[in-house]
Amino acid sequence: MKLKRTTLILLLLALGLGGFVYFYEVQGAHQRQEAEPQEQKIFSFTADQIRSLTVKTKQRTLLLERQDKSSQSRWLMQAPIQTPASNPAISYLTDLLVQGKSERTLQVPASQLQEYGLAQPQASIEVGLKDQKTHRLILGKPDFNKSFLYAQVDPPAQASGDVNVLLVSTEFNNAVNRPLSDWKSQDADKGNSRKPQSKSSSKASPSAAP
Image 1 (cartoon, one colour):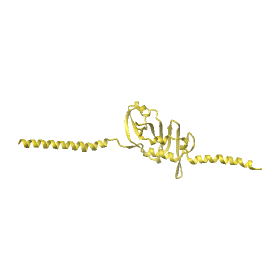
Image 2: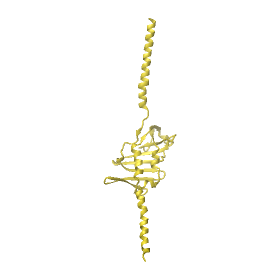
Image 3: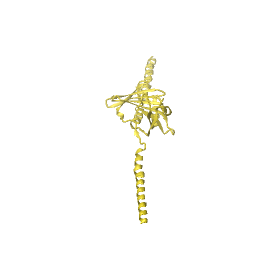
Image 4: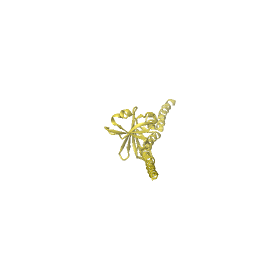
């Protein structure tokens, strides 16, 4: 009789332990996996919705506007100079804005933004959309292993409490920190290089006359 009671107790303990293992390992693992940080898109707009870009770095401020003509769209640089802009350079930046994802989002006190390089960001990108809405992305320091950049999306004018800090691709750094010549259309440079030649040739004609 004692043997049967002991066996029953051991059986109940085994069943209880099995149930605990199931819920902790199987169900718990599924919940923990859902709780792990997942990549999220930085913005939800599309490339066709972008009307203007204002890129501010420590070197300069660029104002780029899209000009729609017939079925073709081209970009113009309005500041610091007025000239046709480089479509490849702008496409590189807009692709990052439209398709880019945040590796992780951190919640940090607003008083610590300086530590992430976001109190005085190295660069900011303001995106103007066709529906008159605007979005901003500010870029701070790289993380400890220089795999990502700290960034903020649409930061408030006066931050308080905890704020969201994103980890974004370092390609943003390459996209905004480039020489002014990279932002200008190569066709525009070719056109400017031809103008002096036409002037010199016109001046040479009278001297060639007897």
